[in-house]
Image 1 (cartoon, rainbow, N blue to C red):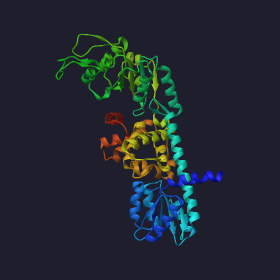
Image 2 (cartoon, helix red, strand yellow; image 1 turned 60 degrees about the vertical axis):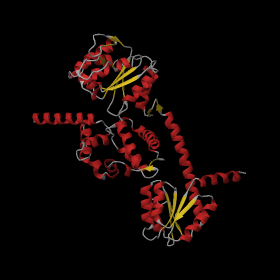
Image 3 (cartoon, rainbow, N blue to C red; image 1 turned 180 degrees about the horizontal axis):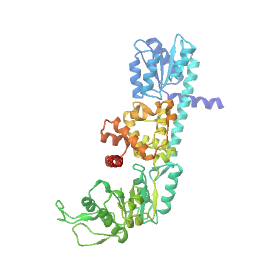
Image 4 (cartoon, helix red, strand yellow; image 1 turned 180 degrees about the vertical axis):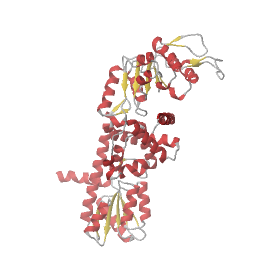
Length: 472
Protein backbone atom coordinates (compact mmCIF):
# COMPACT_ATOMS: atom_id res chain seq x y z
CA UNK A 1 0.00 0.00 0.00
CA UNK A 2 2.74 2.58 0.82
CA UNK A 3 4.38 1.92 -2.56
CA UNK A 4 1.06 2.67 -4.32
CA UNK A 5 0.85 6.03 -2.52
CA UNK A 6 4.49 6.86 -3.28
CA UNK A 7 4.02 6.55 -7.05
CA UNK A 8 1.62 9.53 -7.52
CA UNK A 9 3.90 11.63 -5.30
CA UNK A 10 6.92 10.87 -7.53
CA UNK A 11 4.92 11.58 -10.69
CA UNK A 12 3.72 14.91 -9.26
CA UNK A 13 7.29 15.92 -8.36
CA UNK A 14 8.52 14.99 -11.84
CA UNK A 15 5.75 16.95 -13.56
CA UNK A 16 6.96 20.29 -12.13
CA UNK A 17 10.58 19.84 -13.28
CA UNK A 18 11.03 21.00 -16.91
CA UNK A 19 14.23 19.73 -18.52
CA UNK A 20 16.22 21.11 -21.47
CA UNK A 21 18.46 18.64 -23.37
CA UNK A 22 21.46 20.11 -25.25
CA UNK A 23 23.51 17.97 -27.63
CA UNK A 24 25.01 18.61 -31.05
CA UNK A 25 23.52 15.28 -32.28
CA UNK A 26 19.81 15.56 -33.08
CA UNK A 27 19.20 11.82 -32.63
CA UNK A 28 20.69 11.93 -29.14
CA UNK A 29 18.47 14.90 -28.19
CA UNK A 30 15.30 13.17 -29.44
CA UNK A 31 16.18 9.89 -27.74
CA UNK A 32 16.82 11.52 -24.36
CA UNK A 33 13.64 13.62 -24.58
CA UNK A 34 11.61 10.51 -25.36
CA UNK A 35 12.98 8.66 -22.31
CA UNK A 36 12.37 11.63 -20.04
CA UNK A 37 8.80 12.17 -21.21
CA UNK A 38 7.97 8.47 -20.71
CA UNK A 39 9.28 8.84 -17.15
CA UNK A 40 6.94 11.82 -16.56
CA UNK A 41 9.31 14.76 -16.99
CA UNK A 42 8.33 17.69 -19.27
CA UNK A 43 11.29 18.04 -21.66
CA UNK A 44 12.45 19.85 -24.80
CA UNK A 45 15.75 19.96 -26.61
CA UNK A 46 18.09 21.87 -28.89
CA UNK A 47 21.40 21.37 -30.68
CA UNK A 48 22.44 24.97 -29.98
CA UNK A 49 24.03 25.89 -26.62
CA UNK A 50 23.15 29.54 -27.30
CA UNK A 51 19.45 28.62 -27.66
CA UNK A 52 19.64 26.65 -24.41
CA UNK A 53 21.15 29.66 -22.62
CA UNK A 54 18.29 31.80 -23.93
CA UNK A 55 15.79 29.30 -22.45
CA UNK A 56 17.68 29.41 -19.14
CA UNK A 57 17.57 33.21 -19.15
CA UNK A 58 13.82 33.14 -19.89
CA UNK A 59 13.23 30.69 -17.03
CA UNK A 60 11.74 28.04 -19.38
CA UNK A 61 13.49 25.14 -17.63
CA UNK A 62 14.80 24.12 -14.24
CA UNK A 63 17.31 21.44 -15.33
CA UNK A 64 19.71 21.31 -18.29
CA UNK A 65 21.31 18.06 -19.48
CA UNK A 66 24.24 19.23 -21.63
CA UNK A 67 26.81 17.34 -23.68
CA UNK A 68 30.37 18.12 -22.62
CA UNK A 69 31.77 18.17 -26.18
CA UNK A 70 29.86 20.62 -28.38
CA UNK A 71 31.12 22.76 -31.28
CA UNK A 72 31.44 26.43 -30.41
CA UNK A 73 30.95 25.98 -26.64
CA UNK A 74 32.16 23.17 -24.39
CA UNK A 75 30.26 21.92 -21.37
CA UNK A 76 32.29 23.84 -18.78
CA UNK A 77 31.78 27.13 -20.61
CA UNK A 78 28.07 26.37 -20.93
CA UNK A 79 27.91 25.54 -17.20
CA UNK A 80 29.53 28.86 -16.28
CA UNK A 81 27.22 30.90 -18.53
CA UNK A 82 24.10 29.03 -17.38
CA UNK A 83 24.87 29.68 -13.71
CA UNK A 84 25.54 33.34 -14.49
CA UNK A 85 22.06 33.55 -16.04
CA UNK A 86 20.43 31.67 -13.16
CA UNK A 87 22.47 30.66 -10.08
CA UNK A 88 19.66 28.26 -9.10
CA UNK A 89 19.87 26.23 -12.33
CA UNK A 90 20.64 22.49 -12.13
CA UNK A 91 23.13 21.50 -14.86
CA UNK A 92 23.98 17.84 -15.55
CA UNK A 93 26.98 17.33 -17.85
CA UNK A 94 27.31 14.14 -19.92
CA UNK A 95 30.41 12.90 -21.68
CA UNK A 96 31.75 9.97 -23.66
CA UNK A 97 35.19 10.33 -22.01
CA UNK A 98 34.47 10.00 -18.30
CA UNK A 99 37.14 10.55 -15.64
CA UNK A 100 36.88 11.04 -11.89
CA UNK A 101 39.08 14.15 -12.01
CA UNK A 102 36.88 15.76 -14.70
CA UNK A 103 33.76 14.92 -12.69
CA UNK A 104 35.19 16.50 -9.53
CA UNK A 105 36.24 19.61 -11.47
CA UNK A 106 32.76 19.97 -12.99
CA UNK A 107 31.01 19.62 -9.62
CA UNK A 108 33.43 22.16 -8.08
CA UNK A 109 32.29 24.62 -10.75
CA UNK A 110 28.63 24.07 -9.93
CA UNK A 111 27.50 21.06 -11.97
CA UNK A 112 24.79 18.96 -10.31
CA UNK A 113 26.31 15.73 -11.70
CA UNK A 114 28.68 14.42 -14.35
CA UNK A 115 27.42 11.32 -16.20
CA UNK A 116 28.88 8.97 -18.78
CA UNK A 117 27.50 8.21 -22.25
CA UNK A 118 25.52 6.21 -23.12
CA UNK A 119 23.25 7.48 -20.37
CA UNK A 120 22.27 4.99 -17.68
CA UNK A 121 18.53 5.78 -17.45
CA UNK A 122 18.18 4.45 -13.90
CA UNK A 123 21.10 6.62 -12.72
CA UNK A 124 19.74 9.68 -14.56
CA UNK A 125 16.24 9.24 -13.11
CA UNK A 126 17.69 8.87 -9.62
CA UNK A 127 19.54 12.20 -10.00
CA UNK A 128 16.46 13.91 -11.44
CA UNK A 129 14.21 12.56 -8.68
CA UNK A 130 16.62 13.94 -6.07
CA UNK A 131 16.47 17.33 -7.82
CA UNK A 132 12.66 17.15 -8.02
CA UNK A 133 12.48 16.27 -4.31
CA UNK A 134 14.83 19.14 -3.43
CA UNK A 135 12.82 21.50 -5.65
CA UNK A 136 9.55 20.47 -3.94
CA UNK A 137 11.07 20.89 -0.48
CA UNK A 138 12.46 24.32 -1.42
CA UNK A 139 9.01 25.38 -2.63
CA UNK A 140 7.53 24.18 0.67
CA UNK A 141 10.20 26.06 2.64
CA UNK A 142 9.40 29.24 0.68
CA UNK A 143 5.71 28.84 1.53
CA UNK A 144 6.61 28.48 5.22
CA UNK A 145 8.93 31.51 5.00
CA UNK A 146 6.11 33.59 3.50
CA UNK A 147 3.79 32.54 6.32
CA UNK A 148 6.54 33.32 8.84
CA UNK A 149 7.08 36.68 7.16
CA UNK A 150 3.43 37.52 7.75
CA UNK A 151 3.78 36.68 11.45
CA UNK A 152 6.92 38.83 11.70
CA UNK A 153 5.08 41.93 10.46
CA UNK A 154 3.90 44.52 12.95
CA UNK A 155 1.63 46.94 11.10
CA UNK A 156 3.85 46.72 8.02
CA UNK A 157 7.16 46.67 9.94
CA UNK A 158 9.25 43.51 9.56
CA UNK A 159 11.33 42.45 12.53
CA UNK A 160 12.01 39.63 14.97
CA UNK A 161 15.19 40.89 16.66
CA UNK A 162 15.15 41.78 20.36
CA UNK A 163 15.57 45.55 19.73
CA UNK A 164 12.61 45.60 17.31
CA UNK A 165 10.41 43.48 19.59
CA UNK A 166 11.06 46.09 22.29
CA UNK A 167 9.95 48.83 19.86
CA UNK A 168 6.77 46.89 19.03
CA UNK A 169 6.01 46.26 22.70
CA UNK A 170 6.47 49.92 23.66
CA UNK A 171 4.38 51.08 20.70
CA UNK A 172 1.51 48.80 21.73
CA UNK A 173 1.65 50.04 25.33
CA UNK A 174 1.56 53.75 24.53
CA UNK A 175 -0.59 53.80 21.37
CA UNK A 176 -3.88 54.26 23.20
CA UNK A 177 -2.65 56.88 25.65
CA UNK A 178 -0.13 59.22 24.03
CA UNK A 179 -0.69 62.78 22.89
CA UNK A 180 2.92 63.51 21.90
CA UNK A 181 5.64 61.02 20.96
CA UNK A 182 9.25 61.52 19.88
CA UNK A 183 10.70 58.84 17.60
CA UNK A 184 14.48 58.83 17.31
CA UNK A 185 16.83 56.75 15.20
CA UNK A 186 19.23 56.95 12.26
CA UNK A 187 18.13 57.95 8.76
CA UNK A 188 16.37 55.14 6.90
CA UNK A 189 15.64 53.04 10.01
CA UNK A 190 11.84 53.16 9.60
CA UNK A 191 10.70 55.97 11.91
CA UNK A 192 7.75 56.90 9.70
CA UNK A 193 6.55 53.26 9.69
CA UNK A 194 6.54 53.33 13.49
CA UNK A 195 4.55 56.58 13.36
CA UNK A 196 2.00 54.94 11.05
CA UNK A 197 1.76 51.95 13.42
CA UNK A 198 1.11 54.25 16.40
CA UNK A 199 -1.66 56.01 14.48
CA UNK A 200 -3.25 52.72 13.35
CA UNK A 201 -3.40 51.43 16.94
CA UNK A 202 -4.61 54.72 18.45
CA UNK A 203 -8.21 55.75 19.20
CA UNK A 204 -7.97 58.22 16.29
CA UNK A 205 -7.07 55.52 13.73
CA UNK A 206 -10.14 56.49 11.67
CA UNK A 207 -8.87 60.06 11.49
CA UNK A 208 -6.33 61.43 9.04
CA UNK A 209 -2.58 60.85 9.19
CA UNK A 210 -0.71 63.89 7.83
CA UNK A 211 3.07 63.81 7.38
CA UNK A 212 5.47 66.70 6.84
CA UNK A 213 9.22 66.59 6.21
CA UNK A 214 10.45 69.63 8.14
CA UNK A 215 13.89 69.57 6.47
CA UNK A 216 12.46 69.93 2.97
CA UNK A 217 11.11 73.50 3.33
CA UNK A 218 12.22 76.93 4.41
CA UNK A 219 10.45 78.49 7.41
CA UNK A 220 7.90 80.53 5.46
CA UNK A 221 6.72 77.55 3.42
CA UNK A 222 6.80 75.23 6.43
CA UNK A 223 4.65 77.63 8.47
CA UNK A 224 2.09 77.79 5.67
CA UNK A 225 2.21 74.00 5.25
CA UNK A 226 1.58 73.36 8.94
CA UNK A 227 -0.76 76.18 9.96
CA UNK A 228 -2.35 77.20 6.66
CA UNK A 229 -2.68 80.71 5.28
CA UNK A 230 -5.27 83.28 4.29
CA UNK A 231 -5.70 84.72 0.83
CA UNK A 232 -3.31 87.64 0.29
CA UNK A 233 -1.09 86.72 3.25
CA UNK A 234 1.94 86.69 0.94
CA UNK A 235 2.79 86.78 -2.75
CA UNK A 236 1.19 83.80 -4.45
CA UNK A 237 -1.41 83.19 -1.72
CA UNK A 238 -4.40 83.35 -4.06
CA UNK A 239 -6.80 81.45 -1.85
CA UNK A 240 -7.35 80.33 1.73
CA UNK A 241 -5.55 77.09 2.49
CA UNK A 242 -5.81 74.62 5.38
CA UNK A 243 -2.63 73.66 7.16
CA UNK A 244 -1.79 70.06 8.10
CA UNK A 245 -2.82 70.56 11.73
CA UNK A 246 -6.30 71.67 10.74
CA UNK A 247 -6.49 69.10 7.93
CA UNK A 248 -5.66 66.29 10.36
CA UNK A 249 -7.89 67.58 13.17
CA UNK A 250 -9.00 64.59 15.32
CA UNK A 251 -6.19 62.58 13.72
CA UNK A 252 -2.39 62.47 13.76
CA UNK A 253 0.30 64.85 12.49
CA UNK A 254 3.76 63.42 11.87
CA UNK A 255 6.65 65.91 11.81
CA UNK A 256 9.70 64.20 10.32
CA UNK A 257 13.19 65.64 10.89
CA UNK A 258 11.96 68.08 13.53
CA UNK A 259 15.58 68.62 14.57
CA UNK A 260 16.11 70.59 11.34
CA UNK A 261 13.60 73.33 12.26
CA UNK A 262 14.70 76.84 13.23
CA UNK A 263 14.27 78.25 16.74
CA UNK A 264 11.53 80.58 15.45
CA UNK A 265 9.55 77.65 14.05
CA UNK A 266 10.11 75.68 17.25
CA UNK A 267 8.48 78.52 19.21
CA UNK A 268 5.38 78.27 17.00
CA UNK A 269 5.30 74.49 17.36
CA UNK A 270 5.52 74.86 21.14
CA UNK A 271 2.22 76.72 21.12
CA UNK A 272 0.55 73.82 19.31
CA UNK A 273 2.05 71.27 21.72
CA UNK A 274 1.10 73.26 24.86
CA UNK A 275 -2.27 74.76 23.96
CA UNK A 276 -3.39 72.81 20.89
CA UNK A 277 -3.83 76.15 19.10
CA UNK A 278 -2.79 77.28 15.62
CA UNK A 279 -2.86 80.62 13.87
CA UNK A 280 -2.94 80.55 10.03
CA UNK A 281 -0.51 82.91 8.30
CA UNK A 282 -2.21 86.26 7.70
CA UNK A 283 -5.13 85.54 10.05
CA UNK A 284 -5.84 87.19 13.42
CA UNK A 285 -7.95 84.19 14.42
CA UNK A 286 -6.57 81.47 16.70
CA UNK A 287 -8.05 78.03 16.09
CA UNK A 288 -8.26 75.07 18.43
CA UNK A 289 -7.11 71.69 17.10
CA UNK A 290 -7.27 68.21 18.58
CA UNK A 291 -4.39 66.23 17.14
CA UNK A 292 -1.90 63.61 18.26
CA UNK A 293 1.59 64.80 17.46
CA UNK A 294 4.42 62.47 16.51
CA UNK A 295 7.84 64.00 15.88
CA UNK A 296 10.90 62.19 14.52
CA UNK A 297 14.58 63.03 14.24
CA UNK A 298 17.91 61.41 13.44
CA UNK A 299 19.69 63.98 15.61
CA UNK A 300 20.58 63.79 19.27
CA UNK A 301 18.15 66.47 20.52
CA UNK A 302 19.68 66.52 23.98
CA UNK A 303 22.98 67.56 22.42
CA UNK A 304 21.12 70.07 20.23
CA UNK A 305 19.51 71.58 23.35
CA UNK A 306 22.91 71.94 25.03
CA UNK A 307 24.29 73.56 21.86
CA UNK A 308 21.39 76.05 21.83
CA UNK A 309 19.98 74.80 18.52
CA UNK A 310 16.79 73.27 19.93
CA UNK A 311 14.38 74.69 22.48
CA UNK A 312 14.59 72.90 25.81
CA UNK A 313 10.90 73.44 26.62
CA UNK A 314 9.81 71.94 23.27
CA UNK A 315 12.18 69.01 23.69
CA UNK A 316 10.77 68.05 27.08
CA UNK A 317 7.21 68.45 25.84
CA UNK A 318 7.90 66.10 22.94
CA UNK A 319 10.14 63.57 24.66
CA UNK A 320 7.87 62.62 27.57
CA UNK A 321 7.40 59.44 25.52
CA UNK A 322 10.36 58.47 23.33
CA UNK A 323 10.72 55.48 21.02
CA UNK A 324 14.18 54.74 19.69
CA UNK A 325 14.26 52.81 16.40
CA UNK A 326 17.54 50.85 16.09
CA UNK A 327 19.72 51.02 13.00
CA UNK A 328 20.13 47.92 10.85
CA UNK A 329 23.59 47.29 12.29
CA UNK A 330 21.87 46.68 15.66
CA UNK A 331 19.35 44.21 14.23
CA UNK A 332 21.29 42.10 11.75
CA UNK A 333 19.12 39.05 12.40
CA UNK A 334 16.28 40.95 10.66
CA UNK A 335 18.21 41.28 7.38
CA UNK A 336 17.11 37.92 5.81
CA UNK A 337 13.44 38.57 6.62
CA UNK A 338 13.64 42.17 5.37
CA UNK A 339 15.37 41.06 2.16
CA UNK A 340 12.65 38.45 1.57
CA UNK A 341 9.94 41.03 2.28
CA UNK A 342 11.38 43.51 -0.24
CA UNK A 343 12.01 40.73 -2.77
CA UNK A 344 8.36 39.71 -2.57
CA UNK A 345 7.28 43.34 -2.92
CA UNK A 346 9.39 44.16 -5.98
CA UNK A 347 8.90 40.76 -7.58
CA UNK A 348 5.18 41.55 -7.71
CA UNK A 349 5.77 45.20 -8.68
CA UNK A 350 8.04 44.35 -11.63
CA UNK A 351 6.19 41.16 -12.64
CA UNK A 352 9.31 38.97 -12.20
CA UNK A 353 9.08 35.48 -10.62
CA UNK A 354 12.00 35.97 -8.22
CA UNK A 355 12.44 33.06 -5.81
CA UNK A 356 15.13 34.34 -3.48
CA UNK A 357 18.76 35.24 -2.96
CA UNK A 358 21.73 32.94 -3.43
CA UNK A 359 23.81 31.90 -0.42
CA UNK A 360 26.67 34.25 -1.34
CA UNK A 361 24.20 37.13 -1.82
CA UNK A 362 22.92 36.52 1.72
CA UNK A 363 26.51 36.50 3.01
CA UNK A 364 27.22 39.82 1.25
CA UNK A 365 24.17 41.40 2.91
CA UNK A 366 25.26 40.21 6.35
CA UNK A 367 28.81 41.51 5.83
CA UNK A 368 27.69 45.03 4.89
CA UNK A 369 27.47 47.72 7.59
CA UNK A 370 24.31 49.45 6.17
CA UNK A 371 24.92 53.16 6.84
CA UNK A 372 21.63 53.86 5.05
CA UNK A 373 19.79 51.26 7.16
CA UNK A 374 16.53 49.64 6.00
CA UNK A 375 16.04 52.22 3.23
CA UNK A 376 19.43 51.30 1.76
CA UNK A 377 18.53 47.59 1.89
CA UNK A 378 15.20 48.23 0.18
CA UNK A 379 16.85 50.28 -2.58
CA UNK A 380 19.45 47.54 -3.04
CA UNK A 381 16.83 44.78 -3.42
CA UNK A 382 14.72 46.99 -5.72
CA UNK A 383 17.72 47.58 -8.01
CA UNK A 384 18.74 43.91 -7.93
CA UNK A 385 15.17 42.88 -8.82
CA UNK A 386 15.41 45.04 -11.94
CA UNK A 387 18.80 43.68 -13.10
CA UNK A 388 18.32 40.01 -12.17
CA UNK A 389 18.03 37.79 -15.26
CA UNK A 390 16.99 34.54 -13.58
CA UNK A 391 14.84 33.62 -10.62
CA UNK A 392 17.65 34.15 -8.11
CA UNK A 393 19.39 37.36 -7.10
CA UNK A 394 23.16 36.95 -6.91
CA UNK A 395 26.01 39.25 -5.88
CA UNK A 396 26.48 40.16 -9.56
CA UNK A 397 23.15 42.03 -9.27
CA UNK A 398 24.53 44.16 -6.39
CA UNK A 399 26.56 47.39 -6.63
CA UNK A 400 30.31 46.96 -6.94
CA UNK A 401 31.05 47.92 -3.32
CA UNK A 402 28.94 44.98 -2.07
CA UNK A 403 30.54 42.56 -4.53
CA UNK A 404 33.96 43.48 -3.13
CA UNK A 405 32.94 42.40 0.37
CA UNK A 406 33.40 38.75 -0.58
CA UNK A 407 36.90 39.45 -1.89
CA UNK A 408 38.44 41.00 1.23
CA UNK A 409 42.11 40.03 1.64
CA UNK A 410 42.87 37.52 4.36
CA UNK A 411 45.28 39.96 6.01
CA UNK A 412 42.58 42.61 6.48
CA UNK A 413 41.70 41.36 9.97
CA UNK A 414 45.30 41.67 11.14
CA UNK A 415 45.35 45.34 10.12
CA UNK A 416 42.05 46.10 11.85
CA UNK A 417 42.01 48.86 14.44
CA UNK A 418 39.08 50.26 16.42
CA UNK A 419 37.69 53.56 15.11
CA UNK A 420 34.95 55.93 16.32
CA UNK A 421 31.63 55.24 14.59
CA UNK A 422 31.60 58.70 12.99
CA UNK A 423 34.96 57.98 11.31
CA UNK A 424 33.72 54.63 9.98
CA UNK A 425 30.60 56.31 8.58
CA UNK A 426 32.65 59.12 7.05
CA UNK A 427 35.06 56.68 5.41
CA UNK A 428 32.25 54.57 3.97
CA UNK A 429 30.40 57.55 2.53
CA UNK A 430 33.64 58.90 1.04
CA UNK A 431 34.34 55.52 -0.60
CA UNK A 432 30.87 55.41 -2.15
CA UNK A 433 31.32 59.04 -3.29
CA UNK A 434 34.64 58.08 -4.94
CA UNK A 435 33.03 55.02 -6.53
CA UNK A 436 30.34 57.28 -8.03
CA UNK A 437 33.02 59.70 -9.33
CA UNK A 438 31.76 62.50 -7.09
CA UNK A 439 28.14 62.22 -8.32
CA UNK A 440 26.21 63.10 -5.16
CA UNK A 441 22.79 62.12 -6.54
CA UNK A 442 24.06 58.62 -7.41
CA UNK A 443 25.91 58.40 -4.07
CA UNK A 444 22.69 59.15 -2.17
CA UNK A 445 20.88 56.47 -4.20
CA UNK A 446 23.54 53.84 -3.47
CA UNK A 447 23.55 54.68 0.24
CA UNK A 448 19.76 54.69 0.35
CA UNK A 449 19.56 58.14 1.93
CA UNK A 450 18.05 61.42 0.78
CA UNK A 451 20.16 63.96 -1.06
CA UNK A 452 19.43 66.50 1.67
CA UNK A 453 20.86 64.15 4.31
CA UNK A 454 23.98 63.53 2.21
CA UNK A 455 24.53 67.25 1.56
CA UNK A 456 24.06 67.98 5.25
CA UNK A 457 26.56 65.27 6.21
CA UNK A 458 29.16 66.49 3.70
CA UNK A 459 28.68 70.05 4.92
CA UNK A 460 29.27 69.00 8.54
CA UNK A 461 32.32 66.96 7.52
CA UNK A 462 33.79 69.96 5.67
CA UNK A 463 33.22 72.23 8.69
CA UNK A 464 34.86 69.75 11.06
CA UNK A 465 37.84 69.34 8.73
CA UNK A 466 38.24 73.13 8.48
CA UNK A 467 37.98 73.50 12.28
CA UNK A 468 40.59 70.78 12.80
CA UNK A 469 42.90 72.46 10.28
CA UNK A 470 42.46 75.84 12.00
CA UNK A 471 43.23 74.31 15.39
CA UNK A 472 46.38 72.74 14.01
